[in-house]
Length: 269
Image 1 (tube, rainbow, N blue to C red):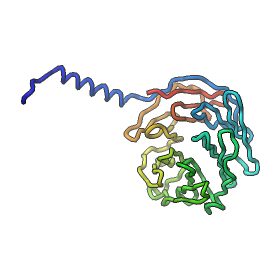
Image 2: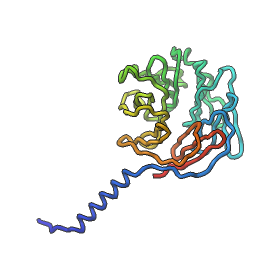
Image 3: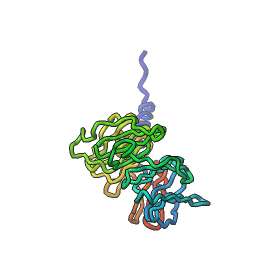
Image 4: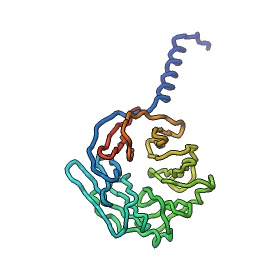
């Protein structure tokens, strides 16, 4: 059966298509929320409960609305890395002793010290991040990712050397969700799934930082923020005039530390 041509119907679909194109193409932006005064040598980040983590004199602090917790372990040397992805299982890494410790939400020890040299025979863990269940992802100087279960105290798997993609690929950091892990280098970003299977490479040169966000990740390059949703790169507008000494992004906010204050912005789309 033939239908008569309806010009209004055609115009409606054109306008609808333009609307979705505009929605998909629009930039992410940050809306300024507030500032938090902070005296800290190192700003670690802010968890989803708005608790602030920072380091002074090699002591980790957690500041809530009404209390400040602290943790130190001087026998392990300099605190190299703190992961607050799960505020109930905070990961501390001491590179000088190739050792990690997990803390609870009050900064009490959940585990004994995990000596990777003894437990995994990996002599030089360079980067460490969270994994699913009771696991940790390690990147070591053998150029491999290692999945380690700290309850069973054993390695579950290791990947092929990540230089398979590029012999000059030199990792500078690793970040993760419970489903994916990304390895950052000056030459690009490699993405793996929770089983250590390589998924894809991202041709992003000279990224300085990377943060998991929604379906993809946010990265920083030349002081500009971009969101990679795995289909396109979306620039993020941020009206921040001071010099950021460190940055942290959680599920909905970005925090910029200028040395005396933490500037909080909400991510808008």
